[in-house]
Length: 210
Image 1: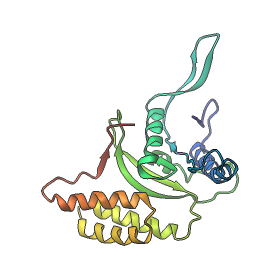
Image 2 (image 1 turned 180 degrees about the vertical axis):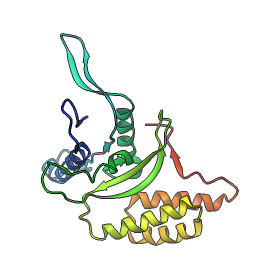
Image 3 (image 1 turned 135 degrees about the vertical axis):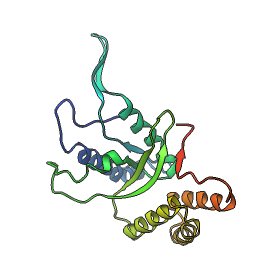
Image 4 (image 1 turned 45 degrees about the vertical axis):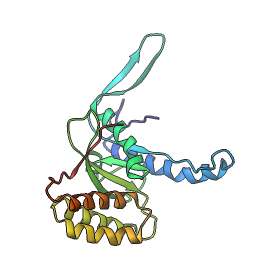
């Protein structure tokens, strides 16, 4: 499923609308799991990728059969980071280009601060630029803000090549939040760097598949 905002009519708050739609979709997952438990016993999930930017928008196809939608690099990046939700074990990822727009006043109800954390810098398959990724979350889980602060602190240590402090923070974080996949993945990268001290630390995750 692909959705877009900002076309055909301009919407200054397109990023806010997209993020609210994503969180609304996530809220519906658990009720759907319960409703269809008999046919989906493995608790299905969804992954959402959000990206903001310029796109070529219009009709594609023929006069008999066509569809209206966006094309271009902005769309490709959104598709790539949607696939990355499986890698990071989170339901919603957004790029920095979206995160920067979330403070724009919106016409969609009262302004409610979004909960998100900087997750990683990544280079998607087939994309030349490095994309800064953020996890978008409802922020309702107990201890979410503390988890965010500690994870981002450990990520900063790692990017600054301060491996001992990164390992110390992440080891404690994983002990307390063992189901937090991003923390587990980052701890693995830190440990791998500690085990190979002669190797250059690359803070960017390069993806070679979708």
